[in-house]
Image (cartoon, rainbow, N blue to C red; front, side, top):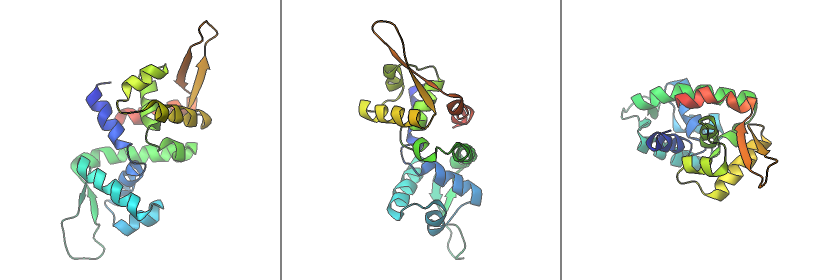
Length: 180
């Protein structure tokens, strides 16, 4: 995958709440700050940081209108409107698999996408994910393995080699990740 495209993908998952916020804004055609706090169960500071990042990326805009108290405070931009339906679908699949907590961590979905693109070894996955540290990547791989999204295979040869691949559950995410 081209580095620029993977950079945008990693940026989407940089904030744990970015995908759920985009999905909620899509569902409600915009939302007020307090509505996002209540529907997502997110802390106010986390939501402020997430919204600031989404605004900076050009996916969300603060509603410039004044007036009616029911008017949404945050809206999707055209770029956000193209991305948000896929975020909503991804949230639905993550919820069905019961892996939202693990999958929405910073490196989990980028790791899944790297594995779907053919990376198998730790170094190959790390090479796809500029900015990841070995510790963060190891943690993501272990958590995803515990959640049943990937499997770790150690070869019998000498020296033993370790490979990672998506499980059947993990492969259910690939079509959605390709659209993001």
